[in-house]
Amino acid sequence: MTRKWHLLALGLVLGLTTVCASFVAGFYSHHEIASRRLQQLIQEDPYAYYISPKIYKVFSFFRTKDEADHRLRQIMKYGFPGLDDLRLYSDFVLSYDRRNRVAHWVCEHLQVDALQSGQVSRQRASYRPDLSVPSNFRSTLADYHRSGFDRGHLAAAGNHRGLQSHCNETFFLTNIAPQIGRGFNSGAWNKLEIYVRDLTLRFGSVYVCTGPLYKPKQRTGGKLSVEFEMIGLNMVAVPTHFFKVIIVESKLPLGKPYMEGYVLPNTALPDGLNLRSFLCDIREIEHYAGLKFFDGIRNAIFASNYPRESQVFRDFG
Amino acid sequence: MTRKWHLLALGLVLGLTTVCASFVAGFYSHHEIASRRLQQLIQEDPYAYYISPKIYKVFSFFRTKDEADHRLRQIMKYGFPGLDDLRLYSDFVLSYDRRNRVAHWVCEHLQVDALQSGQVSRQRASYRPDLSVPSNFRSTLADYHRSGFDRGHLAAAGNHRGLQSHCNETFFLTNIAPQIGRGFNSGAWNKLEIYVRDLTLRFGSVYVCTGPLYKPKQRTGGKLSVEFEMIGLNMVAVPTHFFKVIIVESKLPLGKPYMEGYVLPNTALPDGLNLRSFLCDIREIEHYAGLKFFDGIRNAIFASNYPRESQVFRDFG
Image (cartoon, rainbow over all chains, first blue to last red; front, top):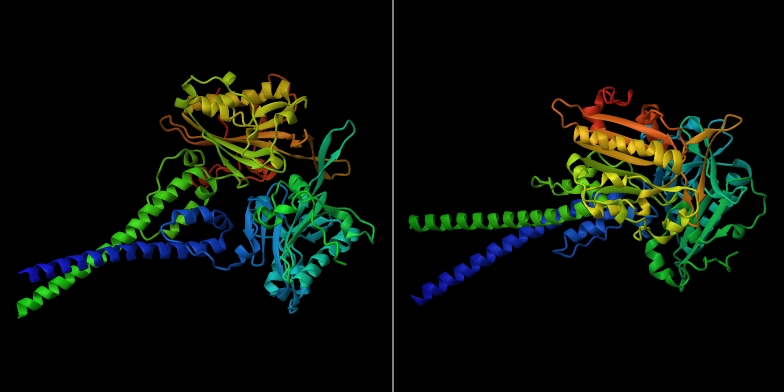
């Protein structure tokens, strides 16, 4: 009789355990499937990626391993400078200013390997409007035609040599802004772009954020006012300045990360000017652009030398 | 013997069913708990709310009932005009322009009941900076002091009479823009605000989106250029115009929804001007503001009369 009771008790315990285990398995399965789907979404949608830390808290019953090494995460490693109309391209991320028909910012991550693969040609790429922008906010080729301005790249074509499609995407007009040609786009601005690639070749990994500024000027009477031209039927703003904010993640032994910002006026600049003369405090760029750069790194690694002094590569020729 | 086998088979089937049921119960529990937590997040974070339809697809194993009637959903019923720096206040939603230190847009939902409860006093409210905006992008009282401009409300204080705290929040400087006082803030703009409340009293439910414009002007030589002043140490932009886009959801029997837009120049306007003379095509406001209004409703109810003709209350005195 006791043996029978023992067996029944054992059976009950086993049964309950199985029921509990099944429940937990079901609970965990839903967690797993949902978080896998979520990771898919996060890789494709910048807003989903931005909000993902909060979404993951919703799933906090189990530790969520969200360590997928997708391109969006790589490029946006140090946070979003702003959140207006985010757009993910295959090798850069962009925030579009629908009011001015020019991007707010474009973020890129340059790596030495991709830079050195040279199968890509600019000649096979062509400027074209980005049809994913609603027509009311889109700039077109006609806006630039005979405007007197160059179609200047924000994410430089020369930074995206890994695949032809990467290079082609830099020719979308969302990544283009009206720039003075001689003395700027083909002058100092080009030198700055080459400098960024040189940094990459030397240090291995470089993050760049590029965008326009619309800086105010002092008027007679001491008043400040912003003034800029608009070109074409779609009214594309002509920025008064352009900025680049750069982080170098040195891969050299004992290399420290560095951060620096440049602001160049959108005018014909004399040849032979030293790029160093365009160095600018990053907090000042942030103020004029209304953006916040590399929020993540600043609190961590850069805590000591930011924002009082912009880091300069004094030793870099 | 057969009876024993039957019993064993029955036991097995019962056991398996229990295991499956427990698994499904576990699966469903996770779904339920996660989606309840998600709904909490969605009520507090505008970006989470914006992305929520995509997030809910991640949970599409069961039908998710997300019909919680929270304020964010009520106010943003017709979609977000833009996505830059979204801010949720208790009775309005705002997108902040960090570059100009003035909002991009403020959305409100006016209802007749809240308007008629009159326990609220403007006198108990005071202008104050919104400390949740990073200092580099924040406007302060000092910026407006002796600037020659009024601190003009975007979401009107008089629209938020339900609770004193609702009224107080309209005095945050994020909801304030530099406006010409005499002839504008206390003139035509005030008339427009009263008109919106009159619409609410008459029709029951009104959605308003208010914001600044920085419109370009024709220069000599035919070039277009944008020009606007900036005031104070923090450089707060002085908009050239202000807009209001209005949807009336008539609660009258057989009442149809209407949509109309107004643009007023930020200058001293003569008394006695008819508000009708400031009516503006909504697509034109969208072009200058870089915003898209009431996306949801337009595809549905407004399909027939938008955007070719702005709807006017011709019968409304």
